[in-house]
Amino acid sequence: MESLSHSEIVKLLLQLSIILISGRLMAELARKLKQPAVVGEILAGILLGPTVFGMLAPLQFETLFPPIGASALVFDGFVHIAVILLLFIAGLEVELNLVWQQGRQAVYTSMLGLIIPFILGFIFPFYFPAFFGREPEADPLIFALFVGTAMSITALPVIARILMDMNLFRTRTGMLIVASAMINDLLGWLIFSVIISMIGTGGGEGMSLGTTIALTLGFTILMLTAGKGVINRVLPWINRRFSWPGGLLSLSLGFCFLAAAFTEFIGIHAIFGAFILGVALGDSEHMPERAKEIVHHFVNNVFAPIFFVSIGLKVNFVANFDLMLVLVVLVLAFVGKIVGSGLGTYLGGYSRRESLAIGFGMNARGAMEIILGLIALENKIIDERFFVALVIMALITSITSGPLMRLFLNPPVKIIPPDKDPTLPTRGYM
Image (cartoon, rainbow, N blue to C red):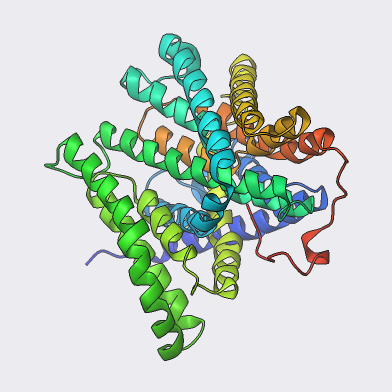
């Protein structure tokens, strides 16, 4: 039976301790500057990675963060678990009843906010693949589909945090943004799951593409209908018979990993199963808000830093920085999402200023694009230049979304920190 050696255990523990401590320190600095914690965590990774530490002390960097070996393999396992849990808590934020309440307006905002960025993100990379960093062995269609999806998905946790900071979470504008982002994310991740199945590297050996897609759609529909019904029946029994919150939390995470294992098995990335299970569980009326908060705090403060700091460990952000590519990606991201979501909102009956404000609100990308980018990088769809541009785009859209929303809202809103408003959830968002 193989096991980690003494030195590898020490190295793994040092990696985790340095990542968690540095990630927390930089996250607190980001919060002081009124920025999402994810910004600080990614900056911590850049400082620890080949961009800074690896350049100043290459031998020490290779010793502490070796690219291969048993400790590197185990650390990669931690990162995969972190990604799965991040998508699980993103799914917990999706409330389907809120989507139904917003009705036609949410459909217009979300669909145009998905379609227009997707078209822009598909056309340019399809005709100019070398400029956008397509790997030579990557299929041109899959590459263009990936970029289109990356341009269209929003970051629901980031959007929710911005709306809370602006005291807009429960307003007419805030509810429309949240409902639209929920539809956007649900459809976006479904599209991305199909793209992953087209790559053919995620599993599902012996299954045709049609079978994989059919199983994916069947799993999604089943979980959001019958699965949700079963959860609604079982949760009250669990809450009565099991110790709280331990029983509910352990079973929730257990079924999260089970759903993730199923979608990985059929050739779809494990994160999709975790996301759909999170949607079904979070939408249940018997899932207490307090339990959601505990899961959020656990994931956001332990596993999220491991993932986001690891981003900076993988790529040299200076060597792979391409200013022209970054600017083009930013233009495509801003134009696609703001025009799409803003037009959809305007068609739904909102004023021009409100439509622009909602368009900027929907433009926050954050963690979702970074997760997509990492999966594409690992599957050799994109090169490191485009990955760096995607990370920068995700950070800039998250940082600018709130101020630009505030600029177009009339009357201007006053920012009230979430901890000063007892009516708002207290869980930390990415």
